[in-house]
Figure 1 (cartoon, rainbow, N blue to C red):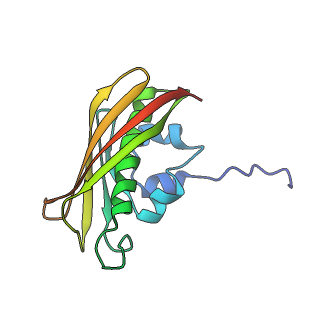
Figure 2 (tube, rainbow, N blue to C red; figure 1 turned 60 degrees about the vertical axis):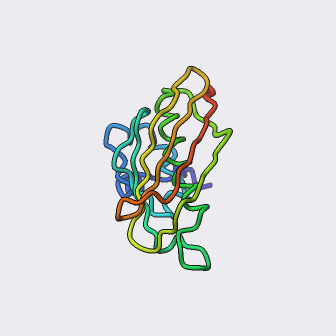
Length: 152
Protein backbone atom coordinates (compact mmCIF):
# COMPACT_ATOMS: atom_id res chain seq x y z
CA UNK A 1 0.00 0.00 0.00
CA UNK A 2 1.28 3.47 -0.76
CA UNK A 3 -0.56 5.15 2.12
CA UNK A 4 -3.42 6.42 -0.04
CA UNK A 5 -7.01 6.02 1.08
CA UNK A 6 -8.18 2.92 -0.81
CA UNK A 7 -11.90 3.44 -0.19
CA UNK A 8 -13.77 3.69 -3.44
CA UNK A 9 -15.53 6.94 -4.28
CA UNK A 10 -19.17 5.96 -4.76
CA UNK A 11 -20.51 9.43 -5.60
CA UNK A 12 -20.95 8.63 -9.34
CA UNK A 13 -22.52 5.23 -8.59
CA UNK A 14 -25.03 6.77 -6.18
CA UNK A 15 -25.91 9.50 -8.68
CA UNK A 16 -26.32 6.99 -11.55
CA UNK A 17 -28.66 4.89 -9.39
CA UNK A 18 -30.64 8.06 -8.58
CA UNK A 19 -30.24 7.60 -4.83
CA UNK A 20 -31.90 10.61 -3.16
CA UNK A 21 -29.39 13.26 -2.05
CA UNK A 22 -30.34 12.96 1.62
CA UNK A 23 -29.37 9.26 1.60
CA UNK A 24 -26.04 9.53 -0.22
CA UNK A 25 -24.06 10.19 2.96
CA UNK A 26 -25.52 7.01 4.44
CA UNK A 27 -24.32 4.98 1.43
CA UNK A 28 -21.06 6.83 0.77
CA UNK A 29 -18.90 4.03 2.23
CA UNK A 30 -20.67 1.18 0.42
CA UNK A 31 -22.39 2.46 -2.72
CA UNK A 32 -25.45 0.60 -3.96
CA UNK A 33 -23.70 -2.71 -4.55
CA UNK A 34 -22.13 -4.29 -7.62
CA UNK A 35 -25.25 -6.28 -8.54
CA UNK A 36 -27.45 -3.18 -8.50
CA UNK A 37 -25.00 -1.53 -10.89
CA UNK A 38 -24.81 -4.60 -13.18
CA UNK A 39 -28.59 -4.95 -13.34
CA UNK A 40 -29.06 -1.25 -14.10
CA UNK A 41 -31.41 -0.62 -11.18
CA UNK A 42 -32.38 3.05 -10.81
CA UNK A 43 -34.30 4.27 -7.78
CA UNK A 44 -37.32 6.56 -8.06
CA UNK A 45 -38.28 6.63 -4.39
CA UNK A 46 -36.57 5.28 -1.30
CA UNK A 47 -38.18 5.21 2.15
CA UNK A 48 -38.81 2.50 4.73
CA UNK A 49 -42.53 2.47 3.91
CA UNK A 50 -42.29 2.58 0.10
CA UNK A 51 -39.43 2.12 -2.33
CA UNK A 52 -39.62 2.23 -6.11
CA UNK A 53 -37.02 1.41 -8.78
CA UNK A 54 -36.77 0.47 -12.44
CA UNK A 55 -34.58 -2.09 -14.18
CA UNK A 56 -34.09 -2.70 -17.91
CA UNK A 57 -35.15 -6.02 -19.35
CA UNK A 58 -32.37 -5.99 -21.95
CA UNK A 59 -29.19 -7.31 -20.37
CA UNK A 60 -31.17 -9.12 -17.66
CA UNK A 61 -32.72 -11.93 -19.72
CA UNK A 62 -32.45 -15.67 -19.64
CA UNK A 63 -31.80 -17.90 -22.64
CA UNK A 64 -35.38 -17.60 -23.98
CA UNK A 65 -35.02 -13.81 -24.22
CA UNK A 66 -37.35 -12.93 -21.34
CA UNK A 67 -36.55 -11.24 -18.04
CA UNK A 68 -34.66 -13.68 -15.83
CA UNK A 69 -36.56 -14.64 -12.68
CA UNK A 70 -33.37 -14.16 -10.69
CA UNK A 71 -33.16 -10.56 -11.92
CA UNK A 72 -36.71 -9.98 -10.69
CA UNK A 73 -35.78 -11.54 -7.35
CA UNK A 74 -32.67 -9.33 -7.14
CA UNK A 75 -34.74 -6.21 -7.84
CA UNK A 76 -37.23 -7.28 -5.16
CA UNK A 77 -34.53 -8.03 -2.60
CA UNK A 78 -32.76 -4.75 -3.35
CA UNK A 79 -35.91 -2.72 -2.76
CA UNK A 80 -36.94 -4.63 0.35
CA UNK A 81 -33.48 -4.64 1.91
CA UNK A 82 -32.88 -0.94 1.28
CA UNK A 83 -36.29 -0.11 2.76
CA UNK A 84 -35.67 -2.34 5.79
CA UNK A 85 -32.24 -0.82 6.39
CA UNK A 86 -33.75 2.66 6.28
CA UNK A 87 -36.28 1.55 8.90
CA UNK A 88 -33.53 -0.01 11.02
CA UNK A 89 -31.75 3.32 11.31
CA UNK A 90 -28.15 4.38 11.77
CA UNK A 91 -25.83 1.76 13.19
CA UNK A 92 -28.13 -1.09 12.16
CA UNK A 93 -28.49 -3.20 9.04
CA UNK A 94 -31.11 -5.45 7.48
CA UNK A 95 -30.31 -9.06 6.67
CA UNK A 96 -32.68 -10.94 4.38
CA UNK A 97 -33.93 -14.18 5.92
CA UNK A 98 -36.69 -15.05 3.46
CA UNK A 99 -37.45 -14.09 -0.12
CA UNK A 100 -40.16 -15.60 -2.26
CA UNK A 101 -41.27 -14.63 -5.73
CA UNK A 102 -44.12 -15.66 -7.97
CA UNK A 103 -43.54 -14.99 -11.68
CA UNK A 104 -46.81 -14.19 -13.44
CA UNK A 105 -45.84 -13.33 -17.01
CA UNK A 106 -42.71 -12.70 -19.06
CA UNK A 107 -41.27 -9.28 -19.80
CA UNK A 108 -39.36 -9.03 -23.08
CA UNK A 109 -38.45 -5.36 -23.51
CA UNK A 110 -38.42 -1.93 -21.92
CA UNK A 111 -38.18 -1.39 -18.21
CA UNK A 112 -39.76 -3.22 -15.33
CA UNK A 113 -40.73 -1.21 -12.27
CA UNK A 114 -40.70 -2.55 -8.73
CA UNK A 115 -42.90 -1.01 -6.06
CA UNK A 116 -42.03 -2.11 -2.53
CA UNK A 117 -44.57 -1.56 0.23
CA UNK A 118 -44.03 -2.24 3.93
CA UNK A 119 -46.23 -4.92 5.42
CA UNK A 120 -44.67 -4.88 8.90
CA UNK A 121 -42.00 -2.60 10.34
CA UNK A 122 -40.97 -4.04 13.68
CA UNK A 123 -38.05 -3.45 15.99
CA UNK A 124 -36.21 -6.61 14.87
CA UNK A 125 -38.06 -7.85 11.78
CA UNK A 126 -39.56 -6.21 8.71
CA UNK A 127 -41.66 -7.59 5.87
CA UNK A 128 -42.21 -5.92 2.50
CA UNK A 129 -44.22 -6.83 -0.58
CA UNK A 130 -42.76 -6.00 -3.97
CA UNK A 131 -44.86 -5.83 -7.14
CA UNK A 132 -42.90 -5.78 -10.39
CA UNK A 133 -44.74 -4.59 -13.49
CA UNK A 134 -43.78 -4.27 -17.15
CA UNK A 135 -43.83 -1.10 -19.23
CA UNK A 136 -47.56 -1.62 -19.89
CA UNK A 137 -48.35 -1.85 -16.18
CA UNK A 138 -48.97 -5.61 -16.24
CA UNK A 139 -47.81 -7.53 -13.17
CA UNK A 140 -44.73 -9.60 -13.96
CA UNK A 141 -43.80 -10.75 -10.47
CA UNK A 142 -44.99 -10.52 -6.88
CA UNK A 143 -42.38 -11.00 -4.16
CA UNK A 144 -42.19 -10.80 -0.40
CA UNK A 145 -39.07 -10.32 1.70
CA UNK A 146 -38.53 -10.65 5.42
CA UNK A 147 -35.48 -8.95 6.92
CA UNK A 148 -33.91 -9.38 10.32
CA UNK A 149 -32.59 -6.10 11.78
CA UNK A 150 -29.22 -6.24 13.54
CA UNK A 151 -26.68 -3.82 14.99
CA UNK A 152 -23.55 -3.29 12.87
